[in-house]
Image (cartoon, rainbow, N blue to C red):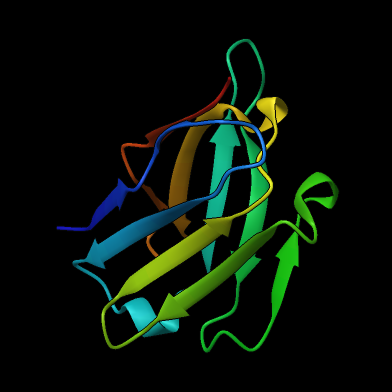
Length: 114
């Protein structure tokens, strides 16, 4: 069955960096557009970043442009989110999403706090 397993979350100070990973299985990863979403307490889930099947195009939430980078390795069926210059408002549970299978991972908590 389809599985998306996120990792790499944690507690980081403002200005710090984290790299999230999402390992996929159970579907043809290289044919799926992949996305990262996040949901903060009391807020709706929002799209953070999206990447095309070959990595040839990407798009980002305005508030993370220039700080976050989405990438993928189709040979490893893994999508990444490099997060730099983290701010307290980036605190949320981060989820990866596979468009072709309409599947979500379990999420990984990112907390930005001093």
